[in-house]
Amino acid sequence: QSVLTQPPSVSAAPGQKVTISCSGSSSNIGDNYVSWYQQLPGTAPKLLIYDNNKRPSGIPDRFSGSKSGTSATLGITGLQTGDEADYYCGAWDSSLSAGLVFGGGTKLTVL
Amino acid sequence: EVQLMESGGGLVQPGGSLRLSCAASGFTFSSYWMSWVRQAPGKAPEWVANIKQDASGTYYVASVRGRFTISRDNAKNSMYLQMNSLRAEDTAVYYCARDRYSSGWYIDYWGQGTLVTVSS
Image 1: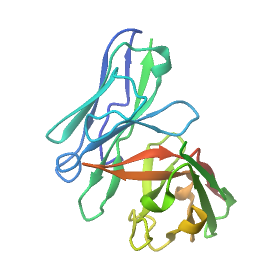
Image 2 (image 1 turned 120 degrees about the horizontal axis):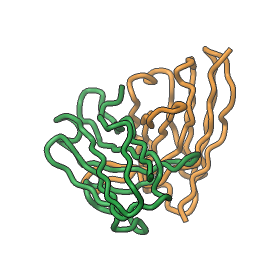
Image 3 (image 1 turned 90 degrees about the vertical axis):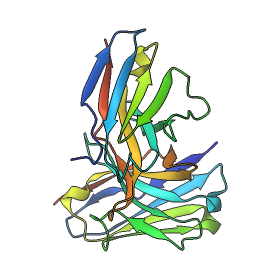
Image 4 (image 1 turned 30 degrees about the vertical axis):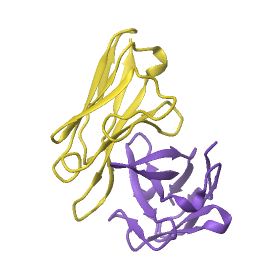
């Protein structure tokens, strides 16, 4: 049971847009910034978004992030088959069991 | 280019010990917090522990506190994870990761991972 809640799967056609939600609580998303990671099959996770909506160098602007209250959203436009991957949200949790917490992951299928 | 290379994984019996190593290159290792993150098969990543730049602060997820010890050697650009009293639920790929903090805390680079299997 992950601390942050994501839908298990989403799907869309090539060229379309998809959003992935991430729900938390006041001790994590509500009080801290959100990051997003992409994990292609058989590889390590890769940073996509940090500080809610900032993209590291090299990440295309097709990827975007937003946060409102205790929820966050990852948006991907112009879907490509190469975007098929697992996506995870992350945030620092300021509760007694402080640490970096992750969502359960969302499998993106590009139909 | 930032590179993180883990080693030391393998098969160990329940109750046994294992020491993981992470060799870092391509950045000033001593300037960064570092973390270990694990991922059980088919599951989400789970942050395990992190360590301050000068090793003066270490933090652990509750499930490993008292069993695992994170350490680093800045002269060798290396980080370690000593794992004792291993349990079946510790089975996972263990990633070495570089921490960043700007407005929020996140991981900007991950190694390729090393597999730890706890089984009799």
